[in-house]
Amino acid sequence: TFRHYIQLSDNVFPESWRDNKTKVSPEERKVFSDQCELYMAQSSIPNAGIGVYTAVDYKNGDHIGEGEMLIPVLTTVENWLVDDVEWGLDLDERLYYEDEKVSGSIFYPGFGAQINCHFGLNNAEHNKPKFDAVGLHRSKDPGVGAFTNWHDMPNIATRDIRSGEELFVDYGYGWFTSRVHLMGDIPTDDEFSHADRIVQKMHALSSKNITTIPKKTFKNKKDLALEDFWGFLRKLSNQALERALPQRYGDLEEVVKHGSARHSVGGESSIRSHEWLNKNGICVDHLYVNVSTIPQAGRGAFAKRFIPKDSVVSPAPVLQLNRGHFYHQSKGFELLFNYAYGHPDSPIFLLPYSSTVNFINHDSRHPNVKLRWSTSPLHRKDFLELLPEEVLKQGFGLMMEFVSLRDIYPHEEIFFDYGAEWERAWQKHVAEWSPVPRAETYITADGTMKIMGILTVDEQKTKPYPDNVRTACFFGDSEDTYYKDADEEDDFFKILQLDEWQSRNDECLRWCTILERRTANDNETLLFDVLIEPQTAHLPEDCILPSDEKIYVNNVPSTKVTLVDVEYSRDQHLPNAFRHFIRLPDDLYPDTWRQNRRK
Image 1 (spheres, rainbow, N blue to C red):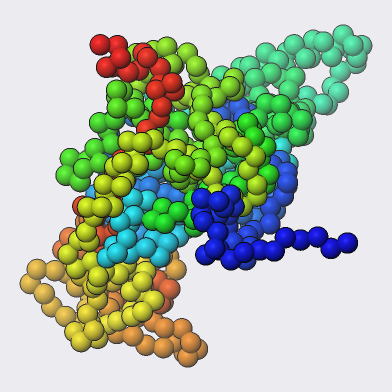
Image 2 (cartoon, rainbow, N blue to C red):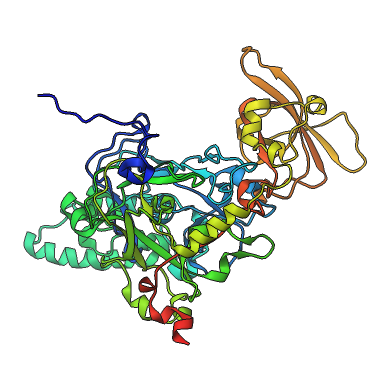
């Protein structure tokens, strides 16, 4: 027989009565597997710390996990742990225009911080992030600038990936060459390919039977001789190649079968079973990202599947950092400060770098998770006994975890209590907040692009762009780019002409002046004639052109012409943006870390 309650409308039921008020609306819900797809566990690379493994198969081109946030970092600090997980501005060329420096960096948690690099086994890559403020605007919303607008950084499989494989992403050779004094020479993909060729030739040679001596006697002597010869051969190699080659001659057969790269992480045993992952790993796939149900909060973290009470919702490995390093000399506290956990009595602040946990928002009345120090053997609990100055000298190892306070159902938003101090600061900010001058006319470069498109310099005389927006083109000088002298003469600059933009010029997003627009012969593609002027700010060193040259470039495709925001104009740089760390309770901060308690 039929059974169903009568549903009252939302405006009749008080919010305080509604347990499910924090859920994503049915039309916005995604469908997720009940099985955890990604696990954090000890990396298969010796001494590499934690890594991330997949529990499902991925095809080349598949998206892996959740898109992450990016947080531009303005402060330059020597020897802080962020150095080891930060990325360069070349993640997205638009990031070069956050400020006037090109030495800035990007904090990229989740896949950008937890996944290791192995040049012989890399299987994932990053794509381009999205940039928006979730519909909030600086003219009316006090939450603008309190969260990063860079989000949904996708992670893509670059080849077919087997269930149980560890995920690896290319850090770039520069990351390792800058640490050669700590790590030595790391094998690149070229060294692993070279090692495979050597192993195959050696294995083929050693398989030949070239004697009439009794087989057993000869085999023993042959193996000893080949073992000595293999050791000698390895010593003749450079350090990187030596590390790519197997240490023992007896391992050659396995290397022939699986390759030197796979052998370097333990061979086929590095492909973890589901049983191994459940026993030794922690699921990092319980959460997904959507627009928060909390006004002004930006984006939030939501449950993919049912999570029972007292379960680990997500591990949260943290970087231990000095509180003072979040402060920028001219801009005040960095946006990164809003994502840090701390205590007023301690100089040690903790920055989580696990996937999606930085999207967890505040609710003091109805939190559904709490934080605790991890019970995993991956957590270095001995750090908790050290004094602050000693803790700050240590490397990776501290780990916390978010634990469910009650049963959490699919599509519920995850909330943590940021503490009374944070809540008072936020309430004060909202009460005293007022928009910056001319806020009502502000529009981002992306927004301007959608409304106005690309205008020539003559069109801009009657329809000028906002002051915070400039035209920019992708143009890089290559060895096989040939110019001719332009008809124009200039007393100060050498004027060059390039009749046709080529795909080899597709790099270096730089300011440009749009001179003319035309339609290509297909009557569909828009082409632009542009002027490239000298520029040193916002460009990496290999993109800087001679300061005495101006270059006219014809037929630049419309896909290579865009608008960029002027430095310091984006929301995170607003002088009235909210800044406050997340307060951890006293019982989570060791006495040894709390200076006032020790005094």
